[in-house]
Length: 318
Ligand code: NAD
Ligand code: UDP
Image (cartoon, rainbow, N blue to C red; front, top):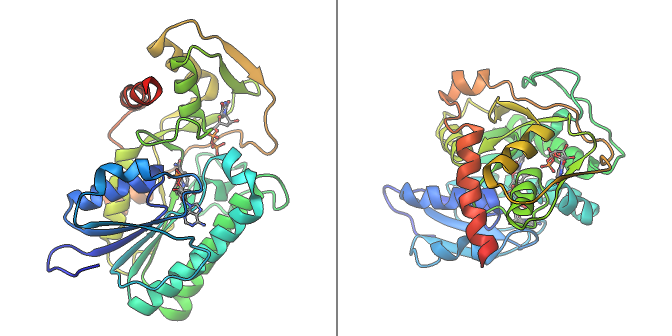
């Protein structure tokens, strides 16, 4: 990647995924040089097709479990499947991606002096016994269940980040992302917001797992990306972890009703079994993000759903 006076050289792993492609777009708009690295496990070239003509953008097919040597100033480590059906499809690969991906990117940061941000997750809190979840909470995670490849994978990545920071003084930024949705999510991704919208648009029934009383707090992607950018811009002493998410908390049943009310049609609600270890509640305490980054989400669920529905309507019509 070329070096200019204004733009930084930024590596985005998982750059062809949902969050990664939105982040690449923002970084390019901010004037940076962007290298997106992806093995297309859940992401697609289509997600970044509109960026390929930009001379400051490069896309490299590469698996982060393999070391990478490129000149960079900043690294956003996002590579990892995030949807439960996808990360459970090949759980050993998920653990390998989390651990070796973090290790290889930290080695790259060590070699280049780049700042590095890790996309961690609210899943580090597991099925939380503290609500809402502050960063000080150590969590309640099953180490041997079907979600463990992801939850424990992300926890060991955080451990690696903080050990590289303590041992080698690497400038790290660890962000714990709470359920985020929006354009460029794969319609077959399997997460709840995309499932409900796509089901309603196709006239299929909306699949609630369990009784729908479990809660999640849904953040619109543009808000999250703004938080990433602010966090990366902080001084080296700001390591996190910092929660990023929208504190607006809804039951899954409420989400289904909202989507049905917005899209209309003939879809009904059907109940399917609740998967094992599905967290009962989840809501970010974003006091740190407010204080340290001056950040809080701007897009509420109603507005965000309208934007997401407009996106999926185009994709489903194709
Ligand atoms: P996504 O599945 O759309 O994107 C993940 C991307 O990583 C895909 O493009 C995939 O092909 C790529 N990838 C997977 N394994 C790889 C490997 N070994 N090498 C190279 N690329 C690989 O998911 P997303 O929602 O965009 O999530 C991005 C990151 O944010 C993930 O690390 C995820 O754990 C984290 N996160 C997301 C959310 C959310 O709500 N979206 C919440 C918490 C954490
Ligand atoms: N869920 C649901 N129907 C779906 C997909 C998910 O009821 O079609 C539920 C799921 O059981 C969980 C919540 O919605 O309680 C959020 O699921 P998602 O996979 O989006 O994210 P995560 O569980 O990782 O927070």
